[in-house]
Each structure stands twice: as C-alpha cells, then as structure tokens.
Length: 575
Image (tube, rainbow, N blue to C red; front, side):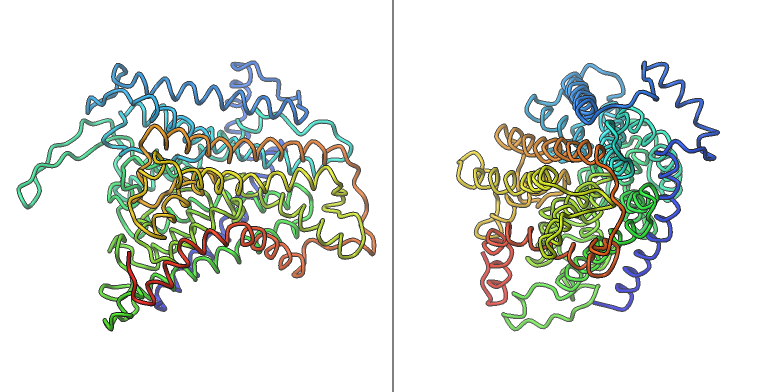
C-alpha cells in the first residue's frame, strides 16, 4: 500500500460525500412533488408523458397495486428485450451483421437487463448490434434503475406518512426517477466521457492493422451514452466485453475516477434524500456512515491484499516488494493505467453498489482480495447497493436491528415513530433469507449437477469460488464474474436467469408489503424508552447485524473457497 493509493481513496470518498448531499436534497424535492428548477424545465414534458400514457399522477396506489404495476412493467420489458435480441439479424443498425441471439442466451440477457443485473454471457461488441445496445441495453439501464429507486421512495414515503392506505404511484415515481434524475445526469456525463475520448457514433466497425501486422476489427457505436447510464444506474453492462478495462470505455485515469464516482453517487444521494423526506436528516447521516464505514473497510482489505501480492511467491522464497507497480503487488488481470489501488477500489465499489462494471478481472485477484467483492455481494446489497435497492435493503436490516434492540430493553421496537411489530419483522427476515436460499441453493446444485460443473474451469477451492461468485453476483443483481466461469450454456443461462429473478422480485415484493404495513401505522412520539436510531451505538449495532447475518450464513462456504485457498497459498500449495 502506498501513500498515493491511500490518498486516492480518501479523495474519492470526499468527492462522493460532497456531491451526494446536494443531489440527495434535490431528489427529495422531486419525489415530494415540490417545485424546483428542474420542474420548470421538465414539468411540461412530465405532464405530456402522463397524458400520452394515460397515467393519473394524483391517483395513488396501495402496496399491492404498486407491486402489480411494477411487476407488469418489468415483465413487458423482459418480453420486448427478448424480441429485440431474437430478431436482431433482421433489424436495422447492425453494422457487423450480427446474427439473432440464441433463445437461452436471449432469455438470460433479457432478464439480466430488466433486473438491473447486466450479467453478460457474451462479448458485447461481437454479439450485439448497435440497435440492441441502444434500444435494448441502454433503455433497460434507465428503466431497471428507476424500478429500484421507486421501491426505495415508496418505503421512505411509508415512514413519513401516518395512517395512510397508499404508498404512491409506481409510474409517477419511475417517470420522475428517469426524467429528473437519471436522464439529466446521463446527458451531462455522456458529454464528459466523449471529452475524455469515449466514442459516441453510429459508424461501421473499423478494420485496422496492428504494429505486428495482424488484422483487427475495432467496434464502433454509441459507447459513451451506454457507459454513462451503466454507471449512474448501477447497471454495469459494458458495450465491450472487457467493460471498463477497455480503453474505449475507460480511456484515462480521470475517466476511471469519474466512473467510480458515477456508480456510487446516486445510491449515496438517496440516503440523504431519505433523511430529508422523513424530516430527520440525522437518520440519513446514520445510514450513510454505516454504509461508508463498511465500504472503506472493504476497500482497505482488498487494497492491502492486492498490494501484498501473491503469497505463493513468498512461500517459494521469491522477493516481492509490495507496491502499485510490477513486480510488486498483484498486477495479474489489472490495467497498468490504473494500478492496484484503483483496481481494488473499483472492485469494492462496484460490488458494494451492485453495479458489476469492472476495470480489472476479479478472477485474478488474490483469494482475500477476491473475497471482499464476493462478501459484498452476499450482504444483501446494502452497502449503498444498486440505486434504490441498497437503501431499501438497508432499511430491512434496520427493522431487524431495532427488533433486536427492543428485545434487549423489553420494548416494542420503533423506527421513526412507527412500531415494528410481528408482521414487519417476519417480512424483513423473509427478505433477508432470499439471498442465502438462492446463492447457496442454486450454487450447491451447480457444483453437483454435471451440466453445472462443466462451467467451472479452475480446480480446487478456486473452482468453488467461481461458482459461488456467479450465483452471488446474479442473486445480488450485480453482473460481475470470476472470468473462469463459463455461463453461456443452456443450464447456466436458465439457472442464472432464475437467480436474477429471485434476487430482484422476491426481495421487492415483501419490501413493498412492509411499506404498505408501515404506511398504515400512526406515528408515536418518542419517549424516554425509545432507542435512538441516529447515534453511534445504533450505527455500530446496525453494522454488527449486517455482518453477523452475512457471516453466519456464508462463512462455512467461504471457508471452503477463498479462505482455504489463501491458507494454501501461504503454505506454498497451488491448484
């Protein structure tokens, strides 16, 4: 670890915090329907879209109607995306004459982008046409992000109301998320990326001759616009197979810094919007501190592990100086333009936020370095998480935390003046159990069934890590992968698609049920026995609950994967 690397991490955290606060306050005004500079410019567009789509913005929905609208909207998106991919060969804007996507891969990809996962069992530039990238991937990057943001807003609204029967209107929340937040940010950020050298065109692919005399086809297309929303919407699906390690997607150190900022800022801003909307900014700060501490610790461990390099060399007596430059540190699978510090930070952030964009190959990390992003995926997507999904996931853990605190003092647990009773706690626990059931259940099936084992390239504990990471990534709607795992088969396309659906909608529906229940409760004034949920004690207890639940659930399988692999490397054993 170097002072420069540590300084970069500190500068990044400060930049995100300073920009997330005003963005969060702006988002709170938008979701509460308050007038702002954006409503002056975009208000007529919003009202026109409502009339065009037949939406009545003043007609709010119960949680059941809200959930039904959300599910119907996403089902329509999946079907449209599937049709685009299957008909790709006959549709326009196909400069490389790409063929139709096979049925199982189209099924997996349609679910992947509709669930904000963006898991890619294909090379983007060698499989997808320009139209598929624009009309399929980019559009779904907006709509899937808006879905997560809408759920978070509905849950926040439930806490801010008393004795209410409704939680808002899904279509209004989704429209506002896109029109007032994601679209303006994406337009500005696209222009920034173009300035940095990211292509934005509809040109034909270019045939080039390399310095060695070999022939190479260089893909062209609207890269910057897809890049912008893949990060701001915590989607992660790259135009190119190498994602943000590709010089066309991430051409400079400044673009790399901005990409890390972009994939975290909206999720962080929603936490401050939460504090504003419930009229207690201390609550938002408490959640932000809890999330931030877990992010910083994870980034520190990952950076340390990668800067130390491969312990197998030390066991063999090979001198290895820990630094960001080769031969010191683990530079395997990393871009020399960014080094160890930026690769470790990017890997931590992209799995904390459930984005999935990568600027290094996680499969090439040391076992402990790879353990950090894997553990982030297993913690129910709560360290900022995907836009919206991280906040409503953390609030679920808050409910469990105040329940535990209530047991300690013998009182009915409360949060923001709402009593957390049996129904809310049961739904919260049910939501938390979705992740281990999907990751461990489907992951175990994969390492037993011959069709599943065929996807695993590495022997020993690293092979287990590859399979475990794949199902953790898809269940957490992340999309990054250990590269040795071959997911493009009928079995894996089907099972990974199922994991994405489980991780998305079996979490969203009970969360909306919690919102519906909480919205109908009266707000109870705080008393001497009320457990404060904005202080240091609560922050520590919340972090402990998140880590203990994740640790107790996944530690046994992690011990068989990355932990035993690390111990074996220290002892000089390779597989």
